Amino acid sequence: MPVLCRPAVAVPEHVITREETLGLARTLHAGHEQLPLVLRLIGNTGVAKRHLVQPIERTLAHPGFEARNATYETEAKARVPAVVAEALAHAGLQARDIDLIVYVSCTGFMMPSLTAWMINTLGFRSDTRQLPIAQLGCAAGGAAINRAHDFCAAYPGANALIVACEFCSLCYQPTDLTVGNLLSNGLFGDALAAAVVRGSGGTGVLLERNGSHLVPDSEDWIAYKVRETGFHFLLDKRVPGTMEQLAPALVDLAARHGRDAGRQDFYLIHAGGPRILDDLCKHLDVVPDMFRFSRATLTEYGNIASAVVLDALRRLFDEGGAAPGATGLIAGFGPGITAEISLGSWTHDAPPPAPHALHDPQALHTPQALHAPHAPLDPPLTPTAAVAR
Image (tube, rainbow, N blue to C red; front, side, top):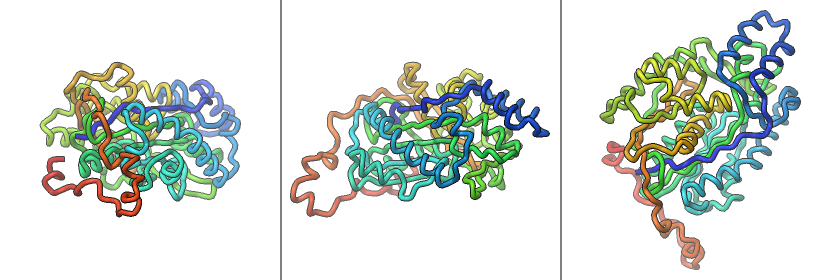
């Protein structure tokens, strides 16, 4: 079964604290009639500090959507290679061993995706599959894990690389004074993360089953309005209460796999805010400490969108991992309202001694290989395998 290996996580060097954020809100929006509410909401996020890709002076300026997006591309190309190299090293693989790159981001736009630049620049094979995901917001971290799982299940022995690149500060809108947007100014942070899903071998989360759930008629609860100045974040006041609708989906998926969602050994949950984590604890009947990795991410980095679940996994690794066979649940939440859910167990399997022949660089450069059509990785997923997954 596919194994989600140790992630690499990086945050930019510029830092803003909660106290500095509150001070800026008081200064920039002194006449806002709902300023007391905004200050209270920011104070209640539990975010102690966040990391920004630019100094705060540049973050507060708005040079235009084109310049913002150019900054996104420049910073992504400068910062992604390091997390990719670290994630590959954690998994005991090289770039040529990767068969699929899943790239997730909701804070900038590129076409072709950054995956094309990565393949051309970072040593990946030219036949590496590309799967960019741009419109699932914070849920995309869970979706990336699930799509990598599906691919590795369909093509046994294949390896997938997940990359999350979120520069939320590039979506700052100084003229948008809605309460939801002002709250986001004190909640979201910037981060990058990468992790490999190995088709076999490796230490980490053995991915066993995944699922998705959409809350009906909630499309406008979390959304972007695309205007001349870029992406404007919309946040409905009903969002903090969504665990009442989403928790049953987690319970149902676990039950179909013979598990109790409230009795897992570890949890890697998207930290959208403290209310989300508190309510999910209540609905699953688990003690708050079970979500300590997600809470730590929220406190130290803020909501880093699709990178949250990978950072939570990184913190589990930093704690020493889990006991072999320990069961866990991964969940990302985002626009839709969407939940991307995965069940797995901890494994300490050692990597295989060598990659499969398809990835042998000598074999790829023989005259026969250069002139022959590329063979598929493996037969596609059969109905029987799909059910088993």
